[in-house]
Length: 427
Image: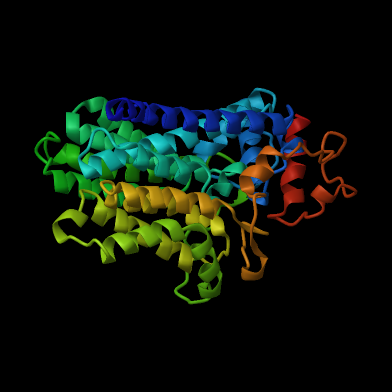
C-alpha cells in the first residue's frame, strides 16, 4: 500500500507542471478573446502606459516603411514594443501578446524552479515545493499585474531566464548558454531597466561562489557576462532613442528621492502582496535556524536583490503596487529555497498563498486598508469573467473630442496617445 502511494506521488511533479501549463494557455486564450481582433479598441485592461506600449509598436511597424510619421509622446524601451508591433502586424488579434503572456507565466515558473534546484543542490525538487512555487507564479495577488498590457511580466521572465542560463553555463561551460545568458539579460534591460540590476547582482555572486573564473576561459570571458549586457544596453538604447521622434522617455531614476513619503503606502502594499514569503523567511530564520544550513548557494544574492528592488520601489516617487512585482520572484525563490527540505513548511506556504489570493483590495494598484476584503472575486475571477469593451475608436477621428477615451490631450495623456494611434492607422 505504501509503495503504491509513493508511486502515485511520483506523478505529482508532472501534474503540477501540466496545471501551470494549462493555466498559462487559459490565460492566453482569454487574452485573445478579450482582444476581439482589435486589441486597443476592445481589451479592457489597458492603462495609459499600455496605450503607449501598443502605439509604440504600431509606430515601429510603420517606421520600417516610411519616415513621415507623427511625433510620439513617450518612447518606450524596444523589446516589448517589438512584440506589440508584431501583434499589430497580425491584425491586432492579441495572438502574439497572448502567446507571450502564456510563455511568461510558464517560464517564470520553470526558470524559478531551476534556480531553486541550483541553489539547494537538488535535481528532483519535491512536489510540495513545486506546488508552492506554482501557486506563487499563478494565483498570488501580485500577479494581477499580468492581466494588464504592460511589459513588467516579460521583464521578470527574461531576468529569471538570464540567471538560469548563467547557471547552465557555469555547470556545462557550453558557449550557447553563455550567449543565451547575455541575450536574455540584455533583452530584460531593454524591456525594463531595473531588471538588469537583478542579473548583475546574482550573476556576479554565482561566478564567484562557484569558483568558475578559470572555467570561464579566462578573465575576458568572465568579464563579458557583465560588460557585454551593460555596453549593449547603453548602445542599443542610444540607437533606439535616436531612430524616432518623441517628446520624452520614462523617468526611471529621476523620480528616486530619499524621503519617507511612501511609508503609509507600502505599509498597506507589502502586507497585502508579499506577506507570505516574508513570513516564511522569518519563521525559517527564527524557529529552525541552523547556521550551516540556512546559507544555500543563492541566499545572499537573492536577499540583496530583493532588498535592493524593495528599496528602489520604496524611494521611487510613484505610488503603484505593481513595482512590488519586480521584487516578487526573487523573494519567492529565496523563501522556498530556505525551506526546500521542510515539507510541512512548504505545505503551510501553499495554504498561505491560497488564502492570500482571497485577500482582495478594491483597487489592486493602490490598496487602502478599509477597502480590503476577503472575497472569491479576486483578480483571477475578474479576469476570466471579463468581457470585451468597446472604446468606439473605429468611428473616431484623431482628436475626437466626443469620445471620453480621447479626453486627456496633454503631452502624456491617453487621448493624445490614441490620437497618434489613429493618425498611424490612417497611413
